[in-house]
Every structure is written in C-alpha cells, then in structure tokens.
Image (cartoon, rainbow over all chains, first blue to last red):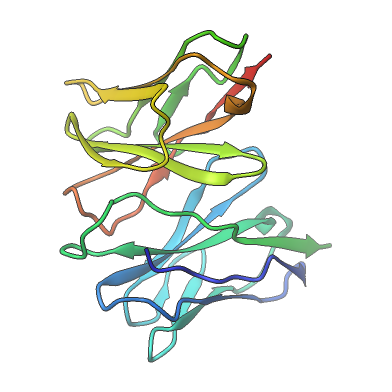
Length: 114
Length: 115
C-alpha cells in the first residue's frame, strides 16, 4: 500500500485557518486521497476525499498538488471541536486492486488553543 | 450519529474467555469492516465483508473470526482472549461495490477489557 507521511502534531489557535500537510510520494494514478479524523473517545469520521482536483465540503477543503505527491487539508476556521487526530489515507480506486479497507497511519494530532 | 450501531459498548472479561461483538451497518450499506485500536498499535484493519462474503483480510489473528449475516449485520468473535486483546473494536460500513472510493461510516466502538 502506498504510504503517507504526516507531522505527529500541530497546534493552532481557535478561529484561525489550519493547514494540515500530507506527503504521499508513491501515490498511484488510481489512488484517492482520503482524510478522516478521530475525536477523543469516538470512532473515525470522514472529512473529505479527492483524486486530482481540489475539493470543498462543509467541513473542510482539500488542496491536491499538481503532481499528486502531496495534499493539504484546510480547516478554514478552527474551533475547539476540531481538536482531533487527522488521518491522511490513500485508497485504491476501482480497478486499483487490493483490499478495500482503509489503512490508518499515526495521523496528526491537532491541538486547538482557545 | 453515523448510523452504524455496535454492541456492547463496554465489555470486561477474563483471559481465556470468548466474546462476540456485534455490528449493524447503516441501512443499505453492503460492506462491513472491523478495526482494532489499541494504544500501541493504532487503528488496525482486521477484516471486511461484502454482502455476506469475506472480501479482504488484514491483521486478524487466528483466534478471531467474523461473519456477515443475510440481514447484513456482522459479528466479530474473539476467543482464547489474552491481555493484549484489550482494545477498542470499531465497525464501519460503506455503500456500494466491493471496491468503492466512497466514505466509511464508523460506529462508536466496543471497548474490550481483558483481565
């Protein structure tokens, strides 16, 4: 499975934007980039995913580099409720082969300061 | 609320015992996934079922087994329990084809403590 590299932790202030980086230099052409987060004492929660183009939804934006070897999850205005572990995961698309499950790394522990 | 229901929420048992964890997927979801999360190993993929059939296996021990029933609920059976099996066990479900790029919906987990 293609691997991702994320910083162990990041700290930000409440109501400020947060940019969470992810490197995935061995990404294949059919791999989708998924982001999940896990709040304390809860199961992981889907945030966003994309293939090539930047994506926006109500939770966040995903900026994907042109060569797809890196991506950035953007929380536009962090709140205390956004404090969580954020996981960047590559997932094979249809025809990409392999297991369909998500392979979680260690993720980035995001700390939000009031 | 993800729509995925797991029972029990908490379970305490002794070494050598056997337990069954149950998962009801979101309505309409055909795939069910099981994950184990312990402090030192992080989230580990155990096994996936799609429409009643085993689809993929991860780091699942031989002492563990799972199945998905015709009504699509799934059970994870853990036997000959050891102290190291203490962990949070998550179930997730997703809609659609076996290879699906869509999102997984996770339950709140079952916390297993082996004494």
